[in-house]
Image (tube, rainbow, N blue to C red):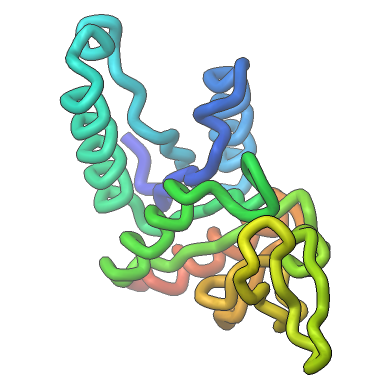
Length: 177
């Protein structure tokens, strides 16, 4: 039994063709930094036979339980299927923060979000997405301001996020003695 802080590994790694190997590697990296890496819920073969809506609800509930059981969330916000982070990951980040858990984000792409969205400027200098015609956030942040503007910002690599997560988890644990 370990008393190490637990870190939920949020991010799109679950969609990678080698998801298990990738998540095992991230968990191993957590161990090297004194954290227990907790991967998102993975249904077993019997559960995978459930109707899609039931399976989706099971996965959602499993991930919520895992987040509640962890001390901190480490979230990969690298662009996923477009210019921004995986929507499931950002939901998990908000859920964790709502529970009062610290969230540390990291990204493999540290360019400002506005550089990743094809856009045009109008006469007033505002940015408009070419695809949807909506305004594009122009704060110079790596991602959406709701999590990139936080006091922790977005870390440029997983290892930096691990170090920050460990320090945050340690600061929340009661002192021994």
